[in-house]
Length: 127
Image (cartoon, rainbow, N blue to C red):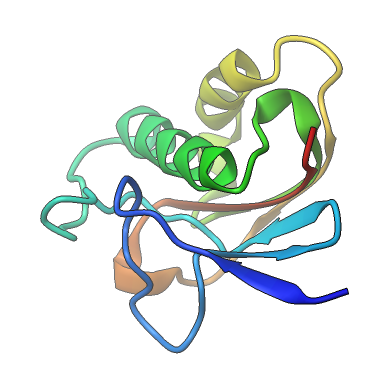
């Protein structure tokens, strides 16, 4: 098998030495998505709900570029800067996985890149 780099201009470009995602066989491994506006690369100002919406939209665009979508996500890791945002984050997250939700880890971290409130990464399979 060969690793294939997944890149789309529909989601934020990498801000460091990493790819938006890698495809290995029928699996896609995304990098963490933060609430960057793809066109400007600016952090979306706003509360956890606004930031989580953009994070999930960016994640879905990266998955789509690799031939996957929300229904093929098998695992996510979610990073919150404040666990007090857990309920509000779950409301947004749940809209993307209304049935057959993937396995998930959700942790509070001391700090996220660009001081955002949330970051989400995923593993998915290609249909």
